[in-house]
Length: 329
Image 1: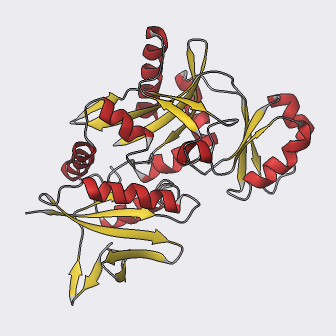
Image 2: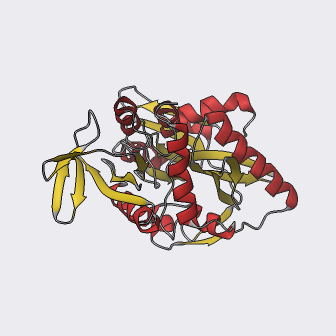
Image 3: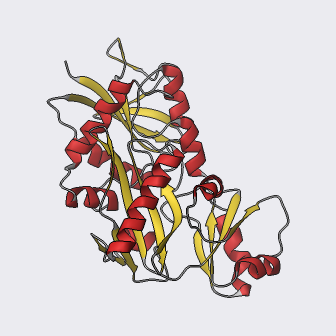
């Protein structure tokens, strides 16, 4: 009997449109022979099942919906939401209470990894190299001169809880700092200020596949702009080279660091982490617990290079969460 799978996409942040593309890709690669797939779109208006022209609200207590006089339940959920509520633990909490298995990390891990500063703080004792950084809060006064004295210029100003490079700015001059902080605060109430590292930038996926943690071939990022911003990621303003042009030593250190980040954080299913090389040492930037999943996205390209089709990866993730009955586990 086919398993009924909800592919949940969209979300309530600036990444809504990107998540819709990821969700569409997931649906297109799930076998209709093995899965009965339903599209669920999340927006500020709520959780809506899309059945042709019909849009039916989800009853969140049981994560089910009514159609033609019948109550419809799901066997599992494929989480394809970038940003809230899919990457910050909200969706996972709902599914835990409804006792529905889901792909990806638990609510606890999602809350941790969605917060860039908390992630960095958590990883520091694990020997992961990272840039010097400080956290600013919206309702607490800050002094831009003191920030610059501590972090230096140029530096990055980032919304602490956001993805797809929304709310990320590179600051070159002291006169730009205040406006950059204010811009980042439009995305989140906390801002991470991070020292700029000049070096080769790479992004590397780590997946759980057929019961094993597997590190994928990394991608080298060459941005045509000032850094790997939204335009570089999604509008072709960059070069992406898979596999990355690394020495044997660099690749070994990167694979070790990426796997350590994945395991130490308690990630599950898949993730993609970004690093900057300083000579032979990879410096960790951040982890995406729900990376982009379109054919043009980095992790799918890396999986393809490793000989793993998206249909295989997505199906394996669903079967894994069903097997492990992973709601909050």
